[in-house]
Amino acid sequence: MKKSWLLPLLVCTGCLDFGYETPGLCPQSGQKGEYWFGYSDGALVFPHCDALTDRVLAPDGATAWITVSPAHKNPKPWRYARSTDNLVVVAGALQSGQVSVSSVHPGRAFVELYDDSNQLADRAEVVVQRPTSIDLPGMAGASPVVLLAGSPLWIEHRPQAATPYVGVGAGVAEAGPPLEILQTPGLSLLPLQLFDNPNNAPTFTELVGSPGNSTFTIGLDGVTTSVAIQVVDVSALTSAKADPPSLTISLVSSPPIIHISALSNTTVVRGARCQWTVPAGLQVPLEVESERLGSDPGTAYQINAVTPGSFTARCWLPGSLTVDVPITVLAN
Image (cartoon, rainbow, N blue to C red; front, side, top):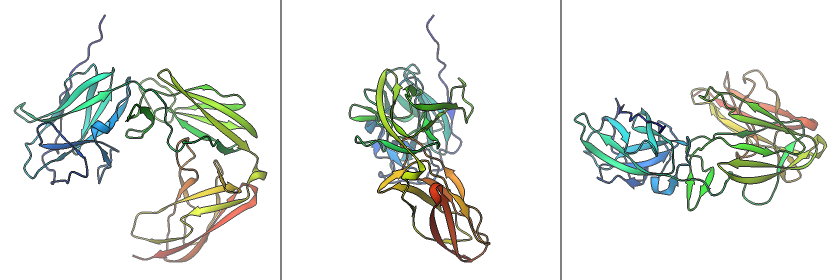
């Protein structure tokens, strides 16, 4: 029996309150010229935006945020959004001028904006296309991923929206159907479900290895790519670095982030985590981002201060490596 898809009518309670935005925020005009449309990172403040013509959605559940911003000072108001073909793409939740979309089958459909009188305000086309290759961010070239033995590297099964994860011709797909880890000789895998999802599928796979060279294969919708990985012993670590190497922060500003990396000669080794020693006046830095395939190497830590002054936080890494981070804390 043919699958039935309901056409959702999505009410946007804040869509009439936009200020005028420049075309640089979302560079593609809708067909009626009332609004700019673009794929966004979902941020409510200063979202990054790419033209819908520059990206496509992979089929079978790819999700993305579309930012809608006024193309002139008096655009026709809109209250809800819907898709012209729910067998291609479904319009989802709304938040502050952004519409979420989810893909179904390959094809083309318009996301349309309507006012309270059910009159069309503007619309823009969304393309859903099957991937032809897998493009992992940060994985260009033939250099292997270098990982510390016994330390985890996370592989995300369903990348976040607006991440250039799967190459499709000249475009780039948004988050798509779950990735599959097809081959892992010499590597240990642990599926992790960190967030609830309808299918109870793992959201990450944690990869851990013993010293040596290996390869694992990632599959997505019938397309595969292989990633070389070199697992090294702690004895291979030669130095460590902090980025930035020092910090000046304020007690009234948002806590800054610092990245700590271990190196083997000039090569960054993933998976080395800090054990911190900090003086009174600083809190122990909080790890906010672990090593993930496709992310920049290094572990991210949030620095929180309690009192003004000059301090030095020391990160201890495996192999007795240390890196000192001078931190100046201002009262305001």
